[in-house]
Length: 231
Image 1: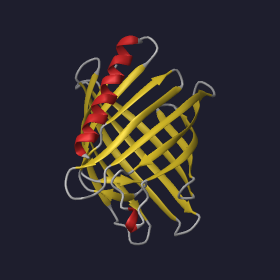
Image 2: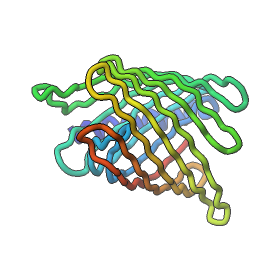
Image 3: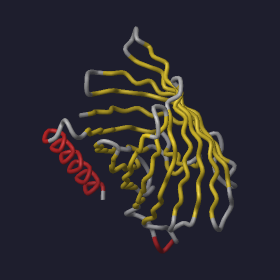
Image 4: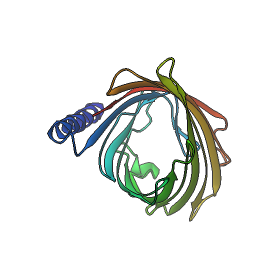
């Protein structure tokens, strides 16, 4: 499965680079290669150390991509997320963002009741107001019959003397499953990106997350580092 994973990502990256060369004026391509010390999703620890490569292509307001999580240690399942969306500008400060995500778990054990795939749609508004980047999203998972509402905000402080910035983020959300416990979650993070050149950026950051889901781990601190390349 690891060889298939690497081959899939390599092919996606190659296709993205080819598309970028063929239509530089129409498309933008972003490749991201991060390492995370914990895989945390909506306030809940999903896995331990992982590599989470992704590729995204965008044109105008449309975008789509492939995101993956590959565990470094242990037997935790790997994951592929295929997503697509569209951003519509409402005014100079706010955008409407809509799309869908397919979650695929190729190593899920159906004998244990694990789902091999699920999918959700999302809609939200995101803005840029006096340097702050607020957002409010609603996600609906049709297969798991679960509704999630999440608010978020980001803020960046430029560090021109070192050619970097400090990017702060925070989120708070609630998960409403049709069956099972409702829970709330939240988190904060800080990221330090540093431009290597016109196309590449390296970064490192710290994150904290928590939830009141019964049985879930509390006070999740994690580290991430990686490189982003854009075309």
